[in-house]
Image (cartoon, rainbow, N blue to C red; front, side, top):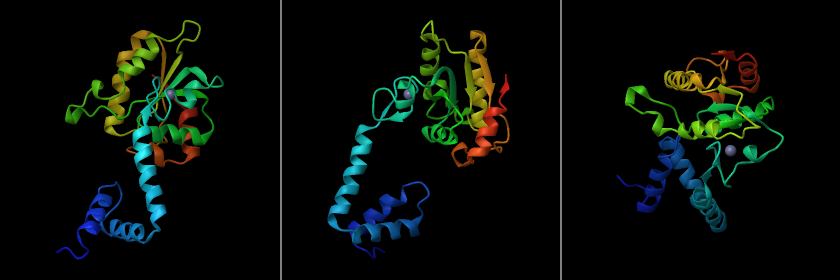
Length: 203
Ligand code: ZN
C-alpha cells in the first residue's frame, strides 16, 4: 500500500539502502528532508554528488582522499619507513585520533574473504607490494604493522601478507590483542588502540 505517494516512497526506499538505516529511520529522515527549506535540500544534494565525483584513492596508500596524494603521504613529518596496514579509511582515521602514530598507512580497501573466494587481487595488496619494491633507496620500508581486524577475514589477510612479505626481510608486526575478537577497529576507543599498537608483536 502506497500511503505517501510515489516520490516520498522512492525517497524512503533510497534512504533505507544506507547502512544502519531501518524503515523507521528512513521514514523520519525522508519527512525531515521534505520539510527542509529548498536551498538546504539543494545544498545537501550538491554535497552528496560532489563528494562522490571528487573521491579518489591516494596513489601511494590507497586511502580515500580528494587529491592525488593524501595529506599523510605528502607529509615530511611522518615516518615513511613504517607502514601500518589497515582495512578501511575509517580505521586510519581511528588511529589518527589516538595521536600516537607517526608512520604512514596502507589501506587495503577490504580483506581477503577465503569463504567467498575473495583473493588478494580484489583488495589493494599489489599497491602495497609496489610501494615496498619501489621505495627510495635512502628511505626503505623498515616495518609493516598489520592492523587488520581480529575477525576471521582480518586474520586470514594478516597471515597472507606475512607469508608474502617474510622473504623481503622487512620487520612485520601485528597489533596486540586487546582489540576484542571480531571487533571493528573503528569502534574501539583510542586508549585500547594505542595500547594494541604499543604492544604489537613481531611475527
Ligand atoms: Zn596516502
